Image 1: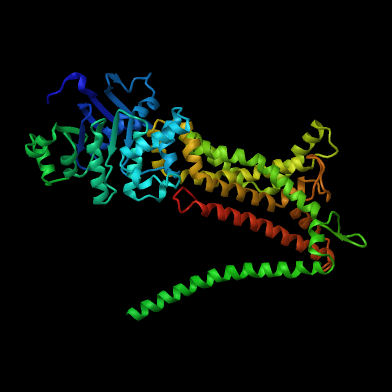
Image 2: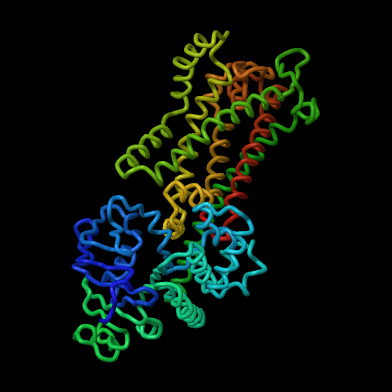
Length: 256
Length: 297
């Protein structure tokens, strides 16, 4: 793995994570590079989503969880007591497995985050809505119905709206937790194109069950099994020349 | 074999239909009875005079059958009780479902269920023996049995209804909405105010209206602590005679099929339509947002 230190946005050192007394992640050490797409793959329950949710402290919302080790975001440990999870989440956007727009208008979905940080000016908000929706390649489909409920959109449109909503916060990183697993192939293709487009400006970390998707969209891939990081390398290497037997078994479909 | 199975299915279907039909027919008969006994009053007094008449002297000669003071009495205690119970009920539901740690949550929920289980006559007793003398002394009133007293006790009765239904509505808000809000950097308070409560609003409105319907139909409390004066009140410390109290107090004394008797049934009809309106409103509100996918009951 050839990287230069200043290119690393996330640095994980010996991370252990527990749900109560159950250990979900064991000794994870890995770096994530800036403006890259990194895919996390592995069978269900391997800890990949848990890891993703550690990066923006979403696991804080679950009672009885515990983190050990260090997770450095731009060199600062985000689990330090003086770091506010609210601040962290404003800089690290997240897109969930199931599209989850608010039961509000399309416009208000996008402006929800920016309003929280104090953007009140109508013109600014309108500009932000247009920019974000254009970035998420949804603008042409919804520009005339911005005041309609987001719940009237199709699943694929809802997911792109959720991406636009995350982008409206102008985050540095976009975490995606199986963003296409609830979508049809056409919507999936659109989201993948979008990821291709977004990686120019954002660091993207994507959890996926779909190995073809990992191969298509990512530059780096990490394979997880039973809470451990088994192999982490360039995507091309993982899929053509895996070094660990378990990785090979998984990607060739022998288990998982 | 298939034929027997089919006959069995049909028999079961029939059985369920009979049970369902029985309860509905029973209710329909009660309703018919209510109308049959109530409507004859309109031979002696017009509906307008009955509802808006200012004097309720059913035993005078000639009698006056104006239930406006009773309607006003019911509405006043209901609205004041709601003004007290709605913030208490809704905010306690928010606290229980979103903020309280698990241990406190369980205690609070049981306490609220306990309040719901107190027989209304006991609450009325409390209003009579504790609240009334205290009010009379503190505010130097001629009587402690008045609008304020009845409203406070009714509020206590409505809080559990409002709280538990609101709580269900808040629980029904999908976790995904909360996660989305937190992931955008919202605090807990912002998430509650801007996402959870709006998403549960239809359910909360239903809770409020059902709580009000409970208060307006409640008989024992208003009979015991509202004071019983069939006059239009001028202050919050005046006595009133809400409709259910009037019916309960006078029915035993009214000669069978007399004008007074019919007038009391007609009061029951008015009360029936008021509660029906509350329930229809609750139903309408809870259905209204269903299609857009927000949380409802």
